[in-house]
Image 1 (cartoon, helix red, strand yellow):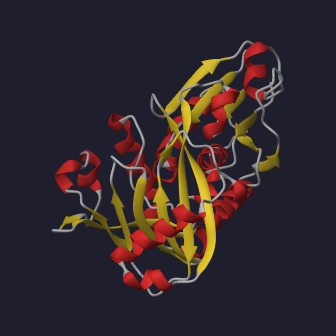
Image 2 (cartoon, helix red, strand yellow; image 1 turned 30 degrees about the horizontal axis):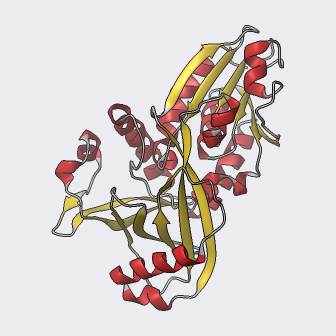
Amino acid sequence: MSEQMIVLGGGVIGLTTAVVLAESGRQVSVWSRDPVGETTSAVAGALWWPYRIEPAGLVGEWALASLRVYEEMAADPGRTGVRLVEGLQSGIRLSELGPWAAEVDGLRQSAQGVHARIPLIDMPVHLAWLRERLEAAGGTVERRALDASPHSPLRSTRGGPWSDAPVVVNCTGLGARTLVPDAGMRPVRGQLVVVENPGVTEWYTSVDHSSSDTTYFFPQPYGLLLGGTAQDDDWDLTPDPRVAEEIVARCALVRPEIAGARVLAHRVGLRPVRDAGVRIEAEATASGGLLVHNYGHGGAGVTVAWGCAREAAALAASRTPLR
C-alpha cells in the first residue's frame, strides 16, 4: 500500500491535522471542496475560548494544548495571524469556568467579568500560513468535490477499494452530516459585521445562552469584527440587513463609537455542532484501510484545533510507516 494519507476538509481542523501528519513524516494530501480562504473557518471571529463545544471533560485538554501552540505563534503575528490581545468576557465568573481556566495565565476577575490576554487570530492569514507550512512539509492541497453519493470518499472506503491511500481522515465539519452520514451534525448560524475600527484595541464578548443573540467585537488587522448570532438549525448563508443593524446597535451599547463606524463587509458562517460532541475515533474499512474522524467542533474549532489534530493524527499515524 502507498503511504499516502488523504485529509478531507480544508478548514482549520483539516489543515492543522494535515500539518501534524506531514511534519511527522507522512505523505499527506488535503482534499477540500472549497478554496481554503472560503471555508467556514475563514469567517470565524477566532478568539481562543471554549465556546459551544462538547464533551466538557475533554475540551479543556484540547484547548490548552492549542493555546500553547498559539502562544508561540504570537511571536510572529504578521506571518501566522496570531496575536495575544487583552479583553473581557462579560458577565461570567472564574468559578463558572472549567478546570482548564487555572492553566491560563493572567485570567482575572473583576466586577464586569473575566479579563484575559489570549490568542485572537486573523483567520485568512492563518489559514494561508497553515497551507504554506503544510506544503513546506511536503503536503499538498487539492480542490475536490466531496458529496454523499455511493462513490464519495467516506462511503467508498467502507464499501470497497477506493484509492491507494491506507488512511482517510475526515475533517469535513458540517459536511459530515451527509458524508458519513451523521444526523447529529447541525448548523448554528453566526452572522457578523466588519466595520472600520474607530480605535478599539481590546476584544469583548457577552453571551446570553438563553438567546440566539450574542454581543462581541474583535479588533482584527482588516477592521473591527462585530457579532453576532447563534441560530440553531439555520442553514441560511445570506446576511440579514435587520440582524446586521441589531448587531451594530448591541456593540455600540458597549462602545458608542462603533455606532458611526463605516461598514466594510457582512459575513455568515455555520458552526458545525454535533449533538454528541466532538468525534475523534477510527474505524476499519472494508478494503483494509483506516478511516479516522475529527469533526463536530461547534464554535471552538480554532480553540481546540491543535489538541484535536494531535489526537486524530496519532490514530492515523499508527497505521502507516514513516517515509
